[in-house]
Image (tube, rainbow, N blue to C red; front, side, top):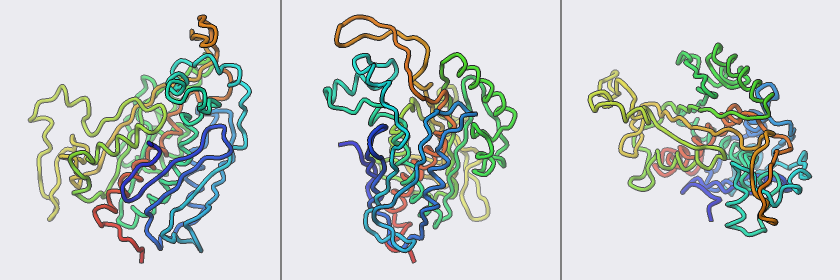
Length: 363
């Protein structure tokens, strides 16, 4: 089944949008990692919606509960089970549309795979709500990576047709989190806010792009040919609902470049070999090359919108008009920023454990 990711740092996701709870089991965390509940909670809090940025009206407390694997403020080496209870779910609107698949959602494909047994409420297993568990796992991974000086930061670089051009020095978690849309470019952030507000008034939604950077990643992480670093990162990013594309470094722009433009020329910085550009995005041949890892992740507009759309009543076979009710994000991008960071952390932590950079006991 496909609910787990990782080889040495294994993350198993469980729960549905309107089920009793959701969370993760993290297996493979070394013993002795100092980790407080407050550190895990802070990641969950970053994921919470902000109404000023088009966030959903659903207000879950999302208080993390640790059931196993942490004792006296440190990991024990046993699987770490973490969950958050669903307390603000309203399933009424979904009972009305159980036979009318929502455009842009996984309602129909889930029906094909699971018959009528899947939990359809709030998107069930296919809801962005499951990413609450992703950030719990990411909090553990971040702590482990910090031991080796690896830092990860993500930020919004585009919403709709509005693109950001932040100064590199402004791309810090502190600066990013000051923005409701998590954009380090103040001028662009203001325009993004206005666009989201306009779309929200139209009962519509808008997508965007999140960029993630990982610094101080040692060279050689990755397991070619099938477990390449960019391959596993892409797999993790595509597990985030609403992701429609991933690129590294120059990405799709490489199609219009010549080899002399795309090749990253080598140079020395002291005794360290570096490249003068980073079109490879920090990954060459499926392995980290010591330069910052740079990836951009495309998010589609939220599928649940109030505008009337055409669908089919599967019970009667007739075409019907559908307006999706309930509480939904007009733009998922700002809330996706910490999720992208944490999924990158999960993958990098797994490869660091495979390479022996992180030991099995933290001393």
